[in-house]
Length: 281
Image 1 (cartoon, rainbow, N blue to C red):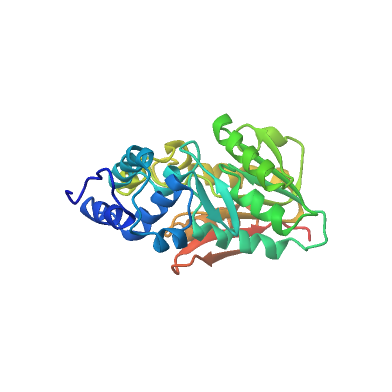
Image 2 (image 1 turned 90 degrees about the vertical axis):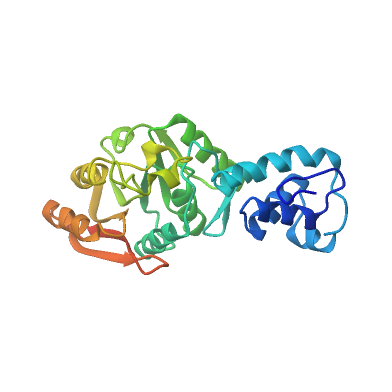
């Protein structure tokens, strides 16, 4: 058998050899095979010399090829873990990243467990942030908006499957919540500069959820500018951003009148989140 092709009678070991020939790592191959067979990695290891079902060959070969071409694993298998939750994802939404859990952790610090605080997640995508907060703070009143109907359908599906209460609305940023105020506004908005050299590696994800003007800060400027009209006294605005944008975002918050402007580092030690508190606590 050629190193990058599957033949009738192939085993798990053959799949790993094929994946290696395509430049894929062992874990990706196992996860794709487990997805096709609906089996755990432990089962695959225990049956690594068993011939694969004939009807698994074509879909598995297709998935291996798509992964070799750079398509994210999460889109291929249809789900991604985030903050202990298994979220369904597709190309209509960004894939939740572990670094965004830094933003969730900061948000949880601002939300007392027993308080019925009002929370707004802007640009919810898959619903990752809103659902993580709803899971950890069930008494909070979580609202989430997105300008994409396709993304909102993914988020709603995740909420229903997980049994978590979030009120979703379709629209751009604060548009759907005119006249409402919240104790926390949180967002992982687009923040990559148009023309950034890293965009080709993200080509499978929705561009409208990635880029935001020449310096990547257009949407953050809009959010910071409109947030005061939607924050309760003492409420917090927390934002995710690029590794080199923390000083610019903190300055925007200070210029708008926010207090306690601060930053948090992600798992890799990069400044990933910046937030501030609206006066009046």
